[in-house]
Amino acid sequence: MEALGCHLSALSEGLVDGDGGRYRDAVARIAAWLRGRQRPDGSWSDKWHASPFFATMRCALTLHRYAGPDAAEALRGSVDWLLERQRENGSWGRWEGTAEESAYAVRTLLELTGDGGPRSREAREAVGRGCDFLVEHGLDVDRHPPLWIGKELYAPAHLVRAAVLGALIAARREPATNNTTQPVS
Image (cartoon, rainbow, N blue to C red; front, side, top):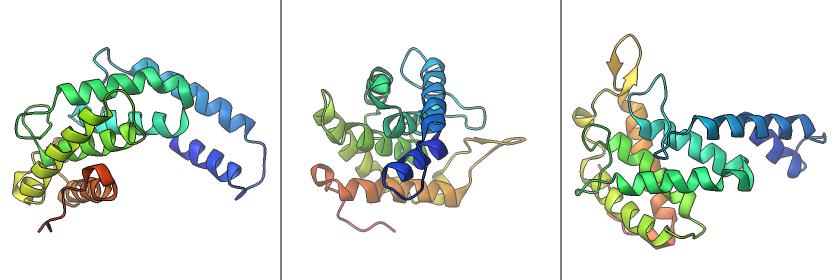
């Protein structure tokens, strides 16, 4: 869906020619399928990742970017699910709070609540606590539990580090959450 959505964006920007009808139809079908796969609690799951935070980020951000108003209810469910699952120390995680899962939650909340909405203030506070956790724990490579599924669970350290750094960079760019000014190592 993301590839089709990017193509539709390129059409609207005049970067490519065409009417986009078949892409819009495909995006609508895929968006409906994704909404139908959402769990009742507001999360999604993925065959190749043990944590619902990764799948929820990928599905929610894709719906937010390309699915239009039909996705509003599903996205509210994701925000609610994320806010309800933040831990006392500011982290998120399926079994324990992890930097990887916290980074996914921060990125999702930033994008889904960046333009306001009923829980945007609560989300901003959660993002701030999440960023504090990421600054303190996020780049310690030895602390990343295996969540990726191959023949066995594994933890791709560079990918996890990139997720953490991406979340911190995204948070720094948001004026309401610019509380992460200290350097990370």
